[in-house]
Every structure is written in C-alpha cells, then in structure tokens.
Length: 98
Image (tube, rainbow, N blue to C red; front, side, top):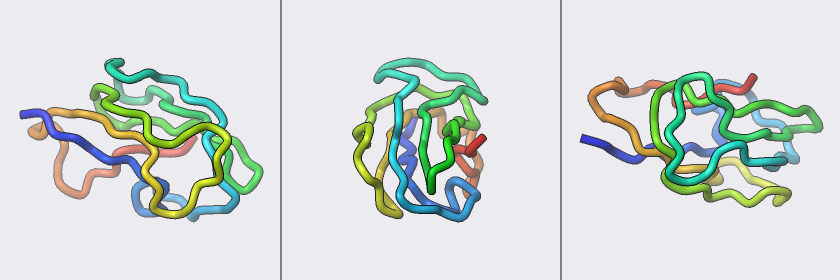
C-alpha cells in the first residue's frame, strides 16, 4: 500500500550537518513524476555550496512544498513523495546530498 514520505531539511534525513543559509535553487522534478533511486529531486544551496538532493528509492513526487530561493530552516518540509510501504524499511534514509 502506498504511503507518503515527508522529506525535510533535517540532518538525520540528509545524513549531513546543516549549514545555513539554505535554500532550493531549482526543482528538477514535478508533481506526479515517477522517479528512480539516484534521481536528483532538487538543487540545494547550503552554506554557499551546491548539492543535488538525491532520492534513494523508487517513488512518485506527490507535492513540492519548499519554494525556490526562500531561506529554509532546519525541519522545513521540502517535498512529499509517495512510495510502496513494503519496499522501505523503518529508519531508512530517504535522500542523500551529492
């Protein structure tokens, strides 16, 4: 059964220490788009360095929540995706920065 995954600006979810200011420079996906593992969802600027926000599992983009160019705070919701709950184990890190 599909379930929604909230991807946030969170050091645990992103497996990286957050550096502020942070903002989405560009979204590389659109709502309803199916994405495969390793697909970049967005270009994220954090502490003056650019990163690609890469998804780690097959899913569908449900909603883009963060606007481009707006300063983000720790915990801010970036994007919601829908995934098959049987494929994602509890505690799995949804994204990585590359």
